[in-house]
Length: 331
Ligand SMILES: NC(=O)c1ccc[n+]([C@@H]2O[C@H](COP(=O)([O-])OP(=O)(O)OC[C@H]3O[C@@H](n4cnc5c(N)ncnc54)[C@H](OP(=O)(O)O)[C@@H]3O)[C@@H](O)[C@H]2O)c1
Image (cartoon, rainbow, N blue to C red; front, side):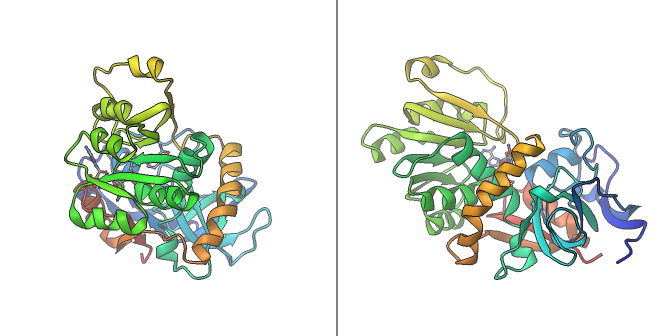
């Protein structure tokens, strides 16, 4: 297939404070580097990072596409590595997901499970790879351990609950309304608190016979620090992956020393390519069969045509989504 020199993509003049500043226009079709696939994107998912990038707060890493979008599903139109033209793939990308075509490092692509539509598969890559990176690779979660996951109904939270539950851990979480809390229970959470009613530590300590949890997955940031430390057991691990409530504030470092806590932070987008390739290989070996068996569920909130990208951004900005917001690429 001959790829057109120009393609459709979501565009905006940076910084764009409002979702309504997004528009669709023509841009140059990207050229894959050696070792990269060119993928005709059929579905993409929104991420919080897209909102930040649109507003000028989260510039793409050097060399990444300036087009929004951190994950794609689509059809290989230019192959590399062991992939064939025509295969369905899904992947995280460092940018470019909101375009008609995107470049994907061959080693970071995963086959789409045959039982999943492209839209549903688009709910997998960023959420489940982020959950795996934090819980398993960095956090070394053990079966029979316990974890508290903030924002349990978020894209990442809904993946992390399922991963931790099927890994054998006890899962505590919080979410902002009754429907989100019910979703968290269905995904495997053992206790779900109202995220608008912190602190959570008292209930978590009660539920763990006073010991506290082995791990906290936090995307709230500084305002949650004290509560996180209070609910962590001796030797507990805190995995930081976002600052939805703010990154700055006065915090007490004391519990790190007195309770031997480990704090780790990461962003999947800035993870080196070789590390990401190893992550994809390890995580997909465990995750993909479980998607194929229906054990793990990509949690899809709402699907929008890319022509309605403004409404999709507005939904995420309002915190209404439970699971992932998907764009299907009908230009
Ligand atoms: N570091 C990484 O590699 C990485 C990768 C992916 C995502 N992330 C981060 O992970 C977080 C979740 O991302 P996502 O795309 O999964 O999010 P999402 O689906 O948009 O969900 C975010 C949810 O967080 C809750 N929330 C938002 N602001 C809050 C606040 N101030 N206090 C308490 N809760 C708040 C809301 O749920 P409730 O109404 O239920 O409270 C909201 O729906 C973001 O911070 C994102 O940047 C990091």
